[in-house]
Length: 401
Image (cartoon, rainbow, N blue to C red; front, side, top):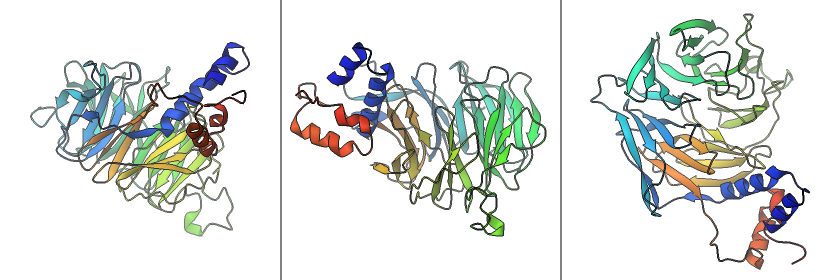
């Protein structure tokens, strides 16, 4: 650590290198926090969670009971042991509550005064956080599996929506109407994600085993369809041509810089793609258990070196190194299947929700302040972790010591 600080002060190092190394160290130290509870409000499984990016303080959750909850993650008590309180709930007693399972919730990217939810009751609702009443309700012909607002859009306010209908719907927040459809899939659309790099680029995943990347400004169809065999027809059967997985594709996630796209499928595989070319990078993550017939919400770290992927795997959350596919650890604590997880980039924490109706907080375990950082034990630990992150080789000790 002292070596990083000295090099930064002398101008020998990238100013962000210390930050990335510390973020990586914190992620590698993630454990279930016994001192932090999250209010248990849902009476059924938790399908989706989202942490707002403005303050990093409030978290949304949506459950199979149709209930939506807003939590305050801030600890105002000053005590080590505390509970993240539910500050407001849209429960079964509300006249505006979703009638069936809530599949996706998302904060408006620029303001906590609004959030969006979608449900199996064939509606998507735009909520006023202050009044907890829907400012706009979009009706669809089939169950709504997913929706997504662009985190970087300045020139449009479109919400991409995936339903049992193979056509992707684009809804405009400004006009309150459905303004466009994207045609190309042949089965229900299970996941949609806007690129965090380019505001007009959209990725969609479907039960037809395909993932398509669109430029919504074009009227001539998708830009390209991801092919797990990278165009090598000798490896693909006639049914597997231009497919991303050999099963339903139910998970999508861009990396923080938007350069790569991750997909998960019911073939128990996770794949990493170059988002610009659509090339399969062929990173082998091994078997990633995935039995969900609906959308699977997984997440990628931000600000680490290397980056990590957090993906629900049965009753655990598997943590992989993004570009090598190495399984770093399994976060175990749920009593039933995990359906969603979300990374908090400000504190390098992970929140996960599952069918056991619990939201668990996974936080970095920090070293005691009185422990000498150049002890033999920590030097050995750093050497053991160097295969995951080369920055650890000189993070805890100095050659001069």
